Amino acid sequence: MPCKTLILRIPPTLIILLLIINYTLGGVSNFASASNQDPTIEEITKAGNEAIIMGDWAKAESQFREAIRLAPTQGFWRIQLVLVLGQQKKWKDAFAEMEPLLKNRAVDWILTVDAKLPDGGVAFVNTEKFGDQEHGILRYVEAVKEKKNVESVARDIGIKLDAFAKQHKIALMYDSSKFKSLPFESGNTADLTKEFINFYNGSEYVSQYYGNVYIYRGDDTPYYGGQVIVRSTDAIVYLDGEEFLSLPERTFIGFKVPIGRYVLQMQWKNIHRVLDVEANKNYYLRVEQATYPNVYQMIADVDEKGATEAIRKSYMLSEKKIKLKRFEIIKTKPSSK
Image (tube, rainbow, N blue to C red; front, side):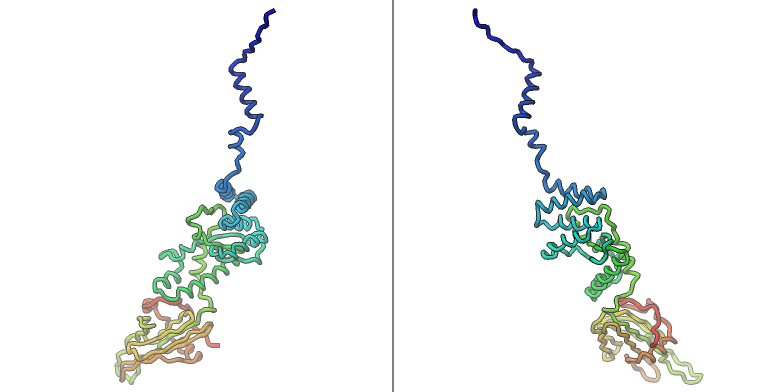
């Protein structure tokens, strides 16, 4: 009997199905390989930032821990992890993550930190706004404009940041301006820039860096019975060579003055007083100027009791009379001890 060849005819659709099954079971397909690729660090950190914005701090923590595992020398992701841990009040872990940053001096973004606030929160301010001419820190703006006492004001701002953070129970406050060129989150973290500026503008200088200087002028015009005497003109006082203020008779003014050396002068430039201001000390200076019967000027030191007695009978100098606005004005009269 002749041998017959069996020809099995398989429908095309079944062939395709068999090929797919064989391709999938026989090894890792190109499709499977693509779908199982590990996420890139960009994808991980993007997911971390998205979790922060959603307020999912646990997910954000896991994402940034993975980012640090992949790139242990990249400080930025560690900073993100510190902040995420802080949001969860995991301050022990957060401070542990800060240690590598401290070793690498990557801590210029930290404005204030307090390890004694286990329940403290996280907040940020944008320090670039401190220099805003209209809405910034007035003392800082003036110091930069005058190019004087910038460092003293900066120290004062740092001290006030600590006080502000403590008042608001903030364990970590950072400077968001340090991350303006990076994909940094704002998310649910409190922005207290405006609140701190208002807090600082309403505060006084810290006494650790400032002394109190009172300048006053008594009644310099003599009286001779019923004779009409022309009262003396304003006494012009200069500070370090610049016109500072003009004092009418029976007026006074007090200032919070940063520690350091200052030179006060009058129109006759040989009339001067070198003043070395120390922290927490009070200084009382009497300015004298007469035009009758003789013309003279003087700047003299006065003891506290005599000065406070004279100032008690005087009027506070109008701010219009202050030409050089370098210092914070003391709004009250001094009281003798």
